[in-house]
Image (cartoon, rainbow, N blue to C red):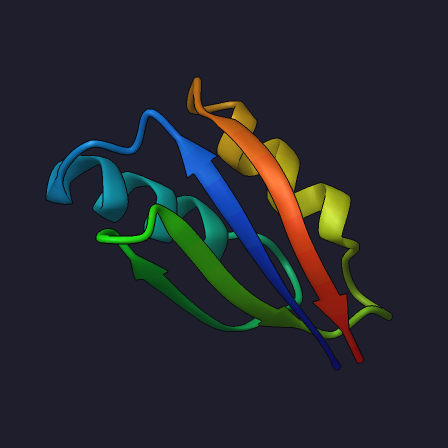
Length: 74
């Protein structure tokens, strides 16, 4: 299990947060996801045998948002 926290630029409102959360939740291997809109962050956990952090980052970028990775932990 791996957990990542990323800062998402241009996530301005709850509608943006909901779109990002939905995209993260649809990545195969996702086990948990949440959005902290006030800090502009997404926190998600996943099974690294099923997905990589890059899969989640790509899902966010495909929505048109820019992300800045903050930390990774196992």
